[in-house]
Image 1 (cartoon, rainbow, N blue to C red):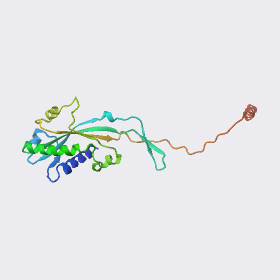
Image 2 (cartoon, one colour):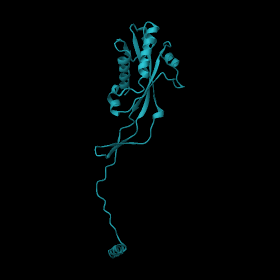
Image 3 (tube, helix red, strand yellow):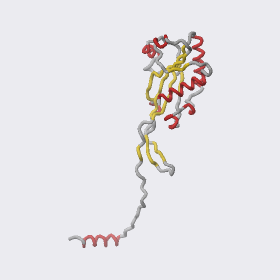
Image 4 (cartoon, rainbow, N blue to C red):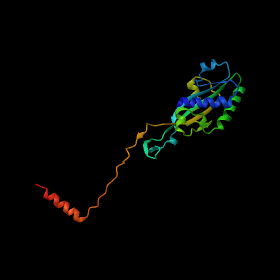
Length: 205
């Protein structure tokens, strides 16, 4: 699931914001050592945080139906995980980095949802929307300066891209077998009940 978003986001940036540039899009941690090895223009999208999107949590069970409209299974609603990417541009000049960031910002802002055509594998099978936010303020318990400090690098301009991804919670639970036998109802009047009671007494030893 995470790797599917990696590829979807990478291709969205590569084909729409960097088309024809030949610039690499990597998924590596932008540490000081990594930055020192860069000798060609590069865009890096580092996945630095994974947490549940509690605002989208749902309760209950969702039924699954067969072709005849019968319930065959029930499953819990998917949980939604927020994948946070630190997107940076690496060139020899700050001006060029700013141009790359601008191009990516325009493309990402134009896509509030990950385009369905970009989704593959399990995400494509689920068929659920995958919202994205760009350059929103971070949660109170997280600061970008702390991320850079943990990486051992120097603070530089970046885009914070957060993708909310649906994840199936548990396998579906099979539904109980459908009752197909006919129900038979008998109407017993008062005289019949008396006769049945007498017969029962006569059979007692």
